Length: 167
Image 1: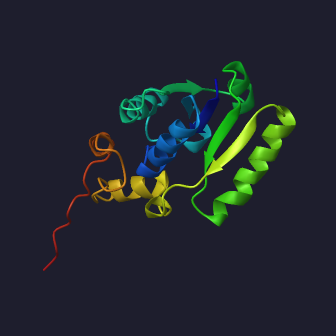
Image 2: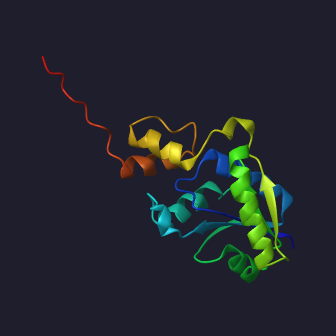
Image 3: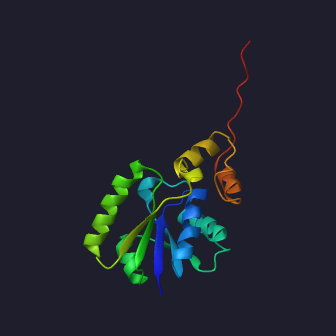
């Protein structure tokens, strides 16, 4: 069985992430979307909340499951008996960092390949950071995330208050 891990913080999940998940599901027999515990990034959503958002988004994909992990990705991938790690690339600026990670992962475990996938061009500008900023400022994020994510973001952010003009 061809098994791949698609890791990420998914804070929050975007349509770009979902696009990569859907396309990876066509290439592999099974895909594990592995939500990473990384408190250094100071996530907006808890690990459980992020995993639940992902699980709901991939419910229509029978060969995709959601899990979470802490620690080295290659160790998690080896424990799952995965053959590949899927990484999304939005732009050239992502490549250098992702390339370094892929090479280090190969040094740690040469049996696990890294596959780079680009989302559809309509999603190349998307990032979780930008989505959070739009939501924090009260903007509409529904074109950028799965249908259930805007409500989760609204719970985290109160709409910005309007200041009365001084006369």
